[in-house]
Length: 328
Image (cartoon, rainbow, N blue to C red; front, side, top):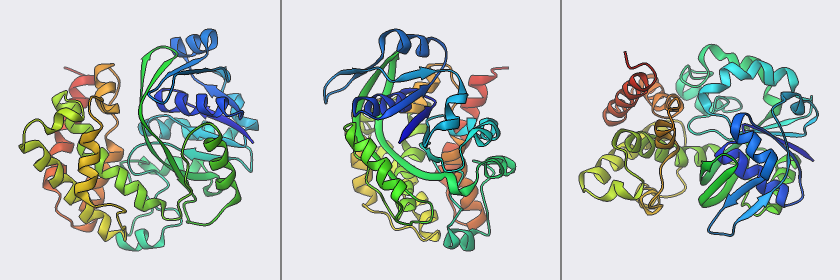
């Protein structure tokens, strides 16, 4: 089974290095100084589980996708509408595409009759404007993924793994597929956890609730996850956002695997770690929020579920992104 990682940044680079360490044939697609450093020195991973260096194949040429059995997409969700037509044209007929993005994935309503019935939607403008991705990528390619791993690029070619090794995967229709078992085995061989989950949407919402609360709040305040607990008002706000998201999830037939209080405690316990949104803000990059707060607000409007705290945070982070990218 040949893997290609499209977007070998903090998460993609970490997964690619793990796959290579486990003996999987994998090619990383990256660009710029990060690619040059990886070509020269390999992918260096600094981790509490043990540092290591891997030397998978690396390129900036998307043609590598054309003969891949599995393509893991590690790009930001907001970039997918732009790249989907190109990716769709390159995919081999039997290729699997693992979507490793934050938030509500663009394919969420595919093979989800309960969700479609609850909303009357076939997709979300906040994650797939105009249905561009859905028109470019055939449903047969899609494999879902929920990432529970915190990583950072500390310098080109060097990835710091903070905590978490779980990459839960599953078919959008919940079926028991051989390809998911094979993908799981490859990830496990590299030292990662990769359970195959028939109710992947439950896991998506468990992760999403944290993303919607933690990511924008840390970007707005500059706090690490651990610092969010320094004043009592902040956990109360986070818990309120959790509750609003859970109400939307419930309307979609979601059963959360753990309690909201446990989810909140787990996030705060990560400690001295900057969320991906705060990292992007400090690096001068565009903020990834439409697939998180934007998707929840859009769904809440369709379902007539009040989400005042989430809507407020969404407005604030949207303005932050606007000022950050265009300060005029």
